Amino acid sequence: MQNYNDLLNGVTDGTKDLTINALTANGAASFKGAVTLGDATGDDITHTGALASTIPIKTNNSYDIGSATLGLAGLYLGNVGAGATCKLASASHATTRVYTFPDAGAAANVVLSEGAATINGAKTFGSGIIVGGNATGDSNLGTISSVTNSSYYEGSWSAVFNQGAGVSGSSTTYTINYVRSGKIVTLLFPGITATIGTTAANLDTAASSIPSSLRPVTAALNFLALMVESAVVQATPGRIIINTDGSISIRMTTTSANWTATHTSCGSAATAFTYTIQ
Image 1 (cartoon, rainbow, N blue to C red):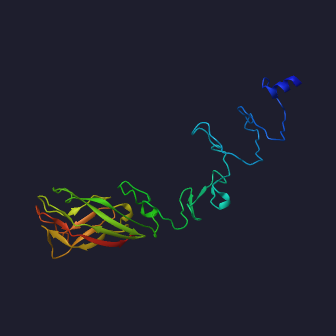
Image 2 (cartoon, rainbow, N blue to C red):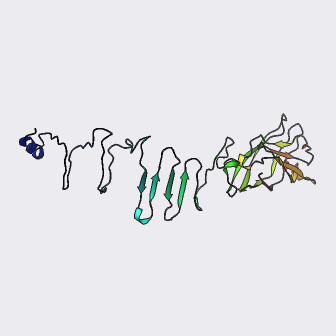
Image 3 (tube, helix red, strand yellow):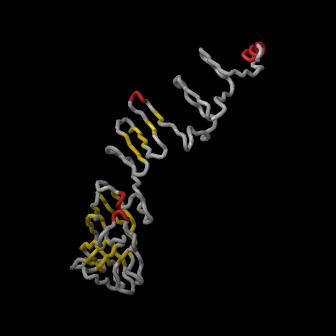
């Protein structure tokens, strides 16, 4: 049994350790040294009062709240009484989690769900939006299945035109602009010309030149366009073909005749056309 001298020394000059089975402090209590609450995970720590100070962290980026299998049901942040609450909640770690973030100065929320994401309400984005991307480099586009029919976006890509398979001649690179609104695509072609090599040829790009979100799905699309040869506009139109594999074919005539060998400034005049992705 601890004697009174130990008790007096412990509470006055701190020279003795005190072991107490149960302790109730009816007034304010201050613990000036390191404090350990509980000595096993089975010990319960109950907070009845309310937090009245910040929680400083001793070592940056070193501690967690909860674990991979035990987490808080919800975390409320911000000015709750003013309706600007930020709540992170999860009823179960095995279910879809919903995180709701308030807009700055607005009542609307952006809701991101596990898996497919949902944005509620009209939003204004101050910069570009990355919808998806693929190996062809169209980092601001997604696949057709990931873009809703009401979406709108615009941009451009670089297309390299060659002079037919196995035909000698220099390649040329042009920037093609596009607008997509839902399933409606508009392509804006600049004047695309090249100097034909020693063999008569047409102009083609490699497969996957067109971003995947702009490609026709069921069949190639043919469009009439004015053609030029040696910088002279031809009397009859030719064809520009948008293929399902993402390639572009430019044909001097509707019957696919070639441009004459060694002729300069051969290709299509500037044009634009619109089609629906099926």
